Amino acid sequence: GTLSGIGAEVGIKNQKLVIISPISGAPAEKAGLRAGDQIVKIDGKDISDLTLDQAVSKIRGKADTKVTLSVVHDVNTAPVDVEITRAVIN
Image (cartoon, rainbow, N blue to C red; front, side):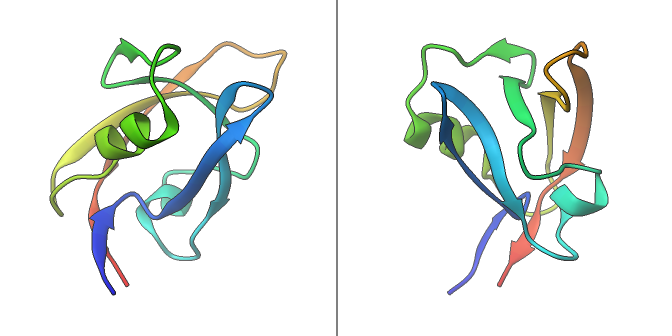
């Protein structure tokens, strides 16, 4: 099937929302997201009280729309904002 979003598998690890695996060639990979990156905000809003399904529904969206994720690449670094344009993912 197809859906639109950033093209990454996300999950919960140690009570944190993390990128499990970006899909090769998808917007998430092109934006520099890597396995293990922690997502701390979606469109500027804290997500600590969201379930996995709620967070995923905020990340997904219509193709050609943008979502901004605040991402921690390494536990010793500050979050960086990454703007990603959603696309159709096959």
